Length: 362
Image 1 (cartoon, rainbow, N blue to C red):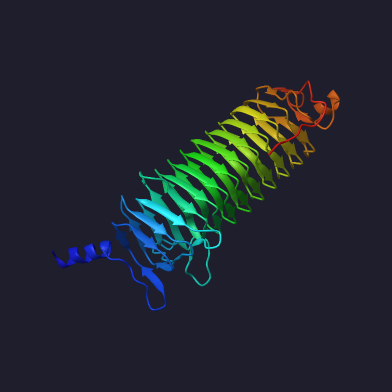
Image 2: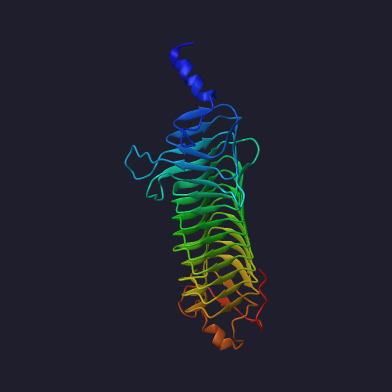
């Protein structure tokens, strides 16, 4: 065995040991056997785990990343890259923490916790804190479950492509983008997604959103494009737009959508239903529709600044059977924008109107 081959072999199989200060320091390294981490791990490089391996991280472990920025783009490059399976198993009392090792940490100090082409069992990220990364948790062609985690002060809290992922009971706050998905199947349930620049963005794939609080996101709370979407029992308040859908197949039911800066719900080239929602107090329109075949019924559409529903397309909007806060036809007519306001637009069909508010269950 040559000297170079021997060195590479030893890097792949030998365990890392803690220094005198109790910190285990890892550099560029590939593991081909299962590993268990505990205590404090400091990563100064890219630590990789080969196909078939499992990395288990015990409760109370801190994994911190130094910042290396060779291309001077301001984004750190040190990270974890798992092609096997990751089990990051914190508890509420002893979370696993992924963070920056810098004295003055900033978003993007390190790369990501990457799960790549992990074709085996489900990866589990449980009761973890992920902060100051570029993409805190990043997954491609894999299955995962993220539960009870805090994602904060990252460029992107979670990014996922061509994967199946469940995100439940998490707090995702203060990131530039909270959750970004493409070509994936997702369950997003019982999370708080607040005070990010972007909230949730979906491109292609299928998603179920249930019981989330999505508040104070500077752009949109939830953005869909070319997705199949079921959103039930969510509270969206204080976002620029609440739900924004383009070319989506959607079912929105039992959601509270209030105090958006612009529209509570924006629908373009989409199909589906909006039922049983409280859509009130939004800064522009409750629902803005452009050339969409969407049935809007059984909702409370009240107190929106300009219009309850504005139709900006040539198709009629079926909005019969909603509560508008009033029952007189002429007064309701003033709360819609359609062809009576601008020739060439379709109508908003609002009659008959509901005679009393609907209970909204969430």
